[in-house]
Length: 397
Image 1 (tube, rainbow, N blue to C red):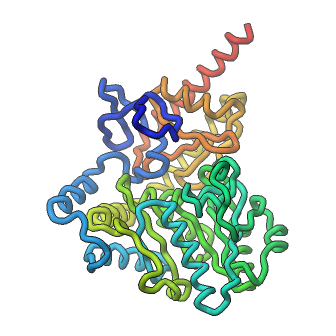
Image 2: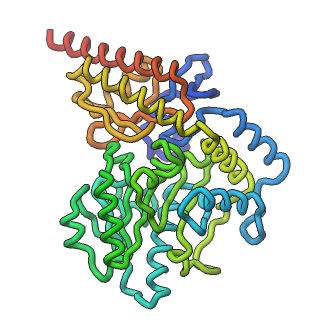
Image 3: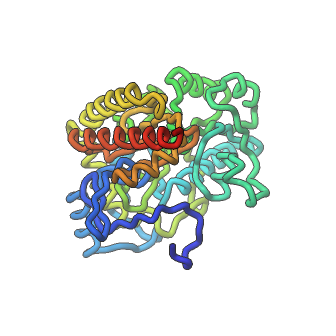
């Protein structure tokens, strides 16, 4: 390992030199099937030709000017997001955490501008993950995230997952917003029921509070719709996105209604790199591809195939896997063995998955993965299960 880099990650010894489609390749030519997409980032796989073209074309023209000037590509991307969502206003960021920070600021500033300066508390959920800035770890509230970084930013009320009674108990005239991942990613691919989300919208309406969706991991086609909120027939006031938006290039965005964003005027927020021409060119190419006729239909079709095949693996290896959960191509395998053992065994079988809380292995393939690559992934998961069982049997004897 490199001693010049802060050791904040538990890295494997793998190092990749190139990628194409759903595959990554090491310097020695070993190919790995990527069922993680860089943690839901490589939405179109690796080195998609349209993204390569977008980067190449824009890199030869202009990379950065700052937000002191108009940026045509930023305006073009913002118009596209507005035309394809609930939103009226967009702020561009460089990451998911920045997008969530922006959402928090929008919510608090909204009520400040309305003269209700004490209406600044935000309800969040146990098991959530909103980023690693001081603000977003306070919103998540998990001890493993906040330990050593206290004092935490104040103003967040955490409730147990899927507990409406606790929300009714905590919500008050000081509640500015409810912040939720409609599908918890780091929390173990835990999905909220549609009726629960609808009830949150009702609660927010009744209490003059805003509803914020953190779609950093579950947005941009991951669930079979461009935005995850579309699956719930609920319109939020603010949505944070990133990850898949750039297809591997750093960019995020915060989407909001005209009403919610009334407080965000000159001087209230900013980002040096946010919405730069290079990032916007790539993100626009990603969105154009994902919104092409038939693309999201194919995501749904492949999601059904993958879920069915994963269910068959679970039926065949019930001592290893317990169930499959999730929406679209954001799936989780709940394990009966330690999930980290499954991830590590995947390296030997040359497949990349990623762990999560609740002893879950996340399955996050590129949105355009082929059916043949899905089958190869299933074959590799079966080999992993067999290997773990053999290891157990040998240990028992």
